[in-house]
Length: 272
Image (cartoon, rainbow, N blue to C red; front, side):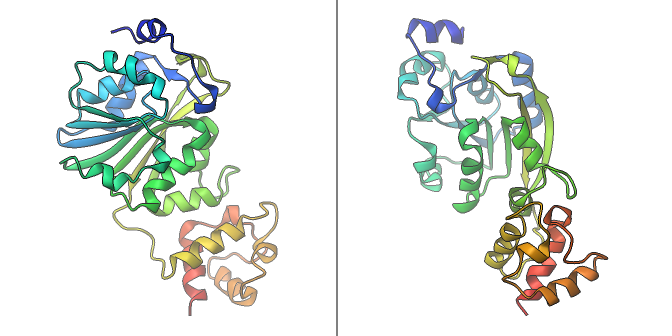
């Protein structure tokens, strides 16, 4: 069924406040599905169903698809577009207000995965929600703003490496999969995109006090052009410098040059 025709017949109006840019390119959609490698017993969560071009392809691979869509005006056109996709359930609500684990109780599945073209204005809150609510998701494959994908997957020493990079890489192995031109969306956004894959780590780096660890990381990046000596004044600088020297570094290094493993060691040593 032609998605654009259905939307036009229902007089659908794109809403800027929801960041609505629907992906329509079949090759890109197929690439996302191929990288997702969805098993038959998988429940896929999709946030921002939009015109359901991705949803239709997910339904052919997954056991079930649980979609979240904040725009209730899409309810009627989506009921027509997805009329033959009986394994798709859509919740018309703000995803950030939902209790995900409660929603998942209605399904039986072997694997849990997120595959979505995320609304760019709430990309980070969506991903951190899965962490905060301890949702046991195996893999997250999402389309995000290109700059955000660079930040998620950045390596120490790069310009994009920041506290969010460290936070997400504590939980996931992250890989930028491929770039996506702004020209494959309807309507066309102002930025290019990228698909990024986050796979849950089987073993996280050893951290004795997560609250302290994340606090140190956040403060270390507080003023990005300043050194650890300037940003971590509230901690034992003498002890931090001693620890840093074991990495052949010192407190005059910036946070962007400190690996997640080194942050963990600093945090663990400061708990002693």
